[in-house]
Each structure stands twice: as C-alpha cells, then as structure tokens.
Length: 430
Image: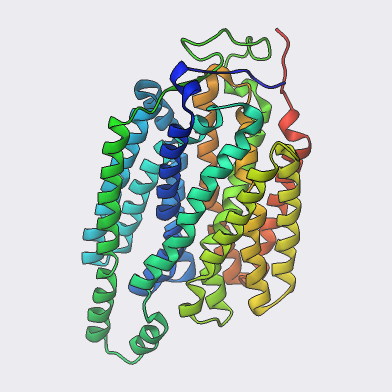
C-alpha cells in the first residue's frame, strides 16, 4: 500500500525548481565523494601508506555518516530541510579548508579528520536531500527522480578523478620510481611538494560550497512533508498505531541493504584504482578507472529514468540490479588483468538503480517517522567505511582479487530485500 504524499502548494506548482537545486547538491556530493578514489593512491604515496592504511580514507569519510546521521535528523527537525542543507554545505567547506594544514604538515591523521568533517556535512545534506527528493512527488516514481539526482552525482563522480587525478597524480608512476632513488632528505622534500598539490583544489571546493550554501539560503526552496508529519494531513491506518521506527521491519531491512550496497559501491568506485595498480597496471592508467565505473552508473540511471515506473517497477529494477551485481562480481573474480577490472567497472551499471530503488521501498509509509527513518538509512552509508576495510584486510592475506568474494552475500541480501524483504511489516491494522 502506497502512502499518500502531501506537498505545500508552492511545491505542487513548481517541482522543477527544487529538482534543479537538489540536483546541484547531488553534483557536489558526487565530486567530493568520488574524489576519494584519487585521494587513496595519492595519500598512499604522499604519506607512505600501506593498502590497509590508505583505505582509511574511505573509513574516515563514510563512518561520519554513522556518527552524524541521527544528530542530523535532530538538526533537520529544528531547521527544516532548506536551512539544514545550508548548514551541511558550510560544514563541508570547513572540512575542505582543513586540507591546507593537513597538506602543509603532511599528516595523514589530519587528512582523516578533514575527511570526517566533510563527511559530517554530507551526512546532514544526505539526510535532508534524499527524503526530500523522494517525497517531492508520487512515491511510485521516486526511483526516477532519484535516478535524475544520480546522473548529477555520477557525472561529478566521473569528472572528479579526471580533474583531481590530473593535478595530484600527474606523472605519478615516474614519481614513484624517482622516490626509490632518493635519500631521506630528498624524499621528504619531494613528498612535501606532492602533498601541496592538493591545497588549491580543496580551496576551490570550499569556495564553491560556501557560495552554494548562500544560494540555498536565499532560494525559494519549499518545505515538503510526508503524510503524518506535524502540520500535515492525518496519517493512514497503515501506520497510525506505530510508535517508533522499530515498528517498521522493512525499514530495517532497507537499512541493511543500504549498508551492503554502499560497501560494494565504494569498492567498485574507490577501490578499483588500487586493485588495478595491484595487478600491474600503471597508476597513470589506473587513476582513470573510477571514471569508467561512474560511466556505467550514468548508463544505469538513464535506463532507470526511461523505464521506471512505465515499464518496470522499482522492486523489479532492484532485483535485476542485484542479479547483475552478483554476475559481474563473479566475472571479476574468475577473470584476470583488464578483463577483471572491466567487470569491476561494470558494477557501476549494476549498482546504479539500487540506491534509487531501496529508498522509496524503505521509507514509504513512515509518515511522521520519515526524518528518523531517513537518518537510519544514512547510517547505512557507513558500509562504505566497513566493507572496504574488510576487503583490504582480506586482500593482504588471500589476495585482493579473491577478497571480492565478500561482495557475493551483499548482492544476495539486496536481492532478498527486492523480492520479499521490502514487504515485511508493510501494513499494520489499527
């Protein structure tokens, strides 16, 4: 049973303007998030890290979602979606500026703190923007709207490694060879110069974030509310007797699905560069691999926009995506060289519609619990912190390629959520 969605009159009259504004936010999400794919090998060289240490980049960034999602929900209840988004952008700008002292001191721990602060701002933005775009129109077409946001996100994600990689990883293979011939003093000086390359890009990012925050503040972005929230229409019988988010089993299964999905998405996007380099592909070539994953996701989003809900339902798209993810994972494990990397990149295509489909299936019918339920799903983004760390630890013992086996149960669980998990506890009689 679908929940009726109520919008304030201004939102009914003009949905395009909010979509454009939220699309700009998703572009920012994408650029900042997928810049991590370049930061991992970059900081690996600049701070002389092992693979497990370098993957702490994703851990620091994504664990912030687990820490800050529920505080973000509290902030949104006080500020509303619009002001909450502005605050999130300013927090991200602060984190970007922290890259200056981190680079000047070439201290990996400082970089991790800066990434955590950026992730904190993103947690607030994600907690606001995902439910906002979901309930901006009919729940049946929510995956289509989220797919449009995904195009904005992954277009930026495709550009980020190209732009940042051209700046901070320029001639990286030659530099690695050169470092092997230097004494300690020369090496330290060279690495200090390398670390300084990241300052200007993140200063520019900070400026853009502040400007966008100011724009959001002065924009006419309307507030939207799901049925059952304060000040809105009376809730339907499907959730009138529910007292907390613990009364929605399908929401919790959606949370697990988000956790697993983000983990495999980060491995397909951020880890692919390390993986390619580990099997003998030059870093000058491997630094572009994330872009290929993002292109796959863009293709998937376009397919979603065209087909959902006209030709296939959101849960049908989720089932197909999970099945393709399983197939491409096995391809990556049982092939070698560029073919294996190609299958990892293809996971971008498989992953594209998973997030857009899980969100509406998981928060449909939450009513007054929509913001809290959305915060719970945002906590699931911590999968991007945990699973890559597990992959890296396994990889150091059994090989990075064999470590991709951890993706198999992830896609199997997502398939379960698509087939029956999203129905559990869907209705409850008054």
